[in-house]
Image 1 (cartoon, one colour):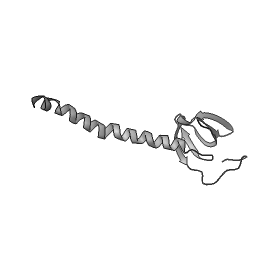
Image 2 (image 1 turned 30 degrees about the vertical axis):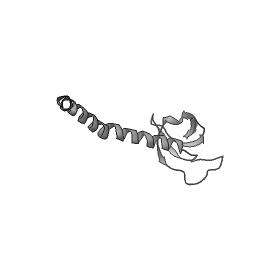
Image 3 (image 1 turned 180 degrees about the vertical axis):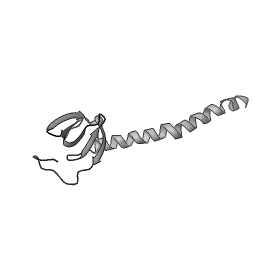
Image 4 (image 1 turned 120 degrees about the horizontal axis):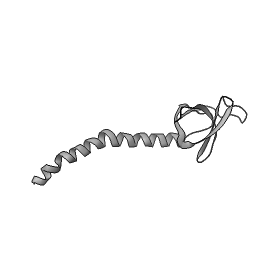
Length: 96
């Protein structure tokens, strides 16, 4: 019984860390993965490097973004957030 009381503070610290740190981080990672799998053409996004652009093309592992006059290819995991979801299907020539 004495050993249980010795480890009780350690167990309580682990439980507190789980609910305050680990669980919220796992939920956030799940949301980011979901957002990255739901990327579609015409979405306005921001990369982890801070580049703002519009999604031109989406492959299994890559995303092509248009930023200004440039088209850049990134890994899907480089997209940090979607700032504006596409509401209409874009034609092949223009995506603004």
